[in-house]
Length: 134
Image (cartoon, rainbow, N blue to C red; front, side, top):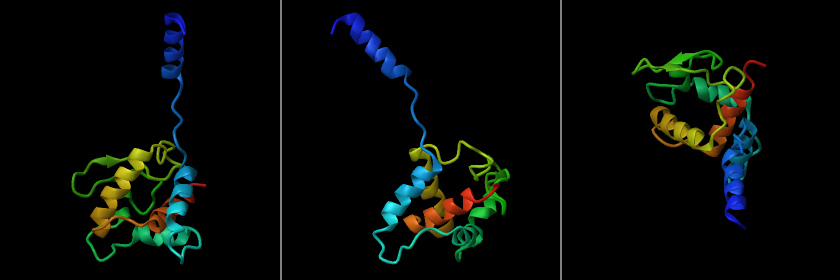
């Protein structure tokens, strides 16, 4: 391939849009992980809501910062930083980048649970969040 052809190919590759993941992509990944648990039978929005609003024997719940309505803007209870809505219906940018999804689940689960969330817990919460604002 000559220089012009190589340059054109590189330009096309660089210009190609990067596909953002969708929330359903994460649900599928969480389901694949959760299937390792013999008791896994699917995700539940009601179980996700209960998880989201419960303090889990700690000081915080997910709703402490994200509010009881995840389609609304929240505020971090320590830093007072504004948090954009968590529900994808209110904030289409949520659950579109794997690195961010993993980072925030890891950090927030450790804050709320003092451990990482299981795939079942992540899937239940995401199922609940997807049910909001429809």
